[in-house]
Image (cartoon, rainbow, N blue to C red; front, side, top):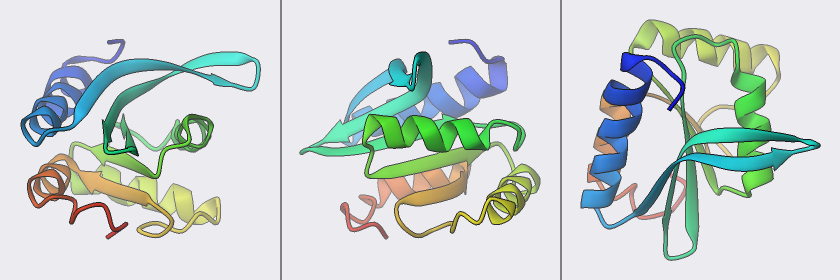
Length: 129
């Protein structure tokens, strides 16, 4: 994976392992075509035809690209996972400026702890909760 230690090990690998323990099929660095460009989704979790794209972000800079990748993938949910609440708040502000509603239509901004809790609680099984 391309990110640093926090991105790769703390955020993505830890979530991938937890998804797998809960019975999800997981792939990391999944290539997806966005327009004429190949981009990579950090983590894709699939189960029973339900797809969750997970993007780990340590700043709000790449949020628009994350939205494009999840749309191109056809994911039912996009989780933007951050290492702390300060960065999560920055991501939410960026989404507000883009007029993109959070916690609706399958878009969630979560700290790593909240993402882990969501996985362990069965997501509450798949109802866009």
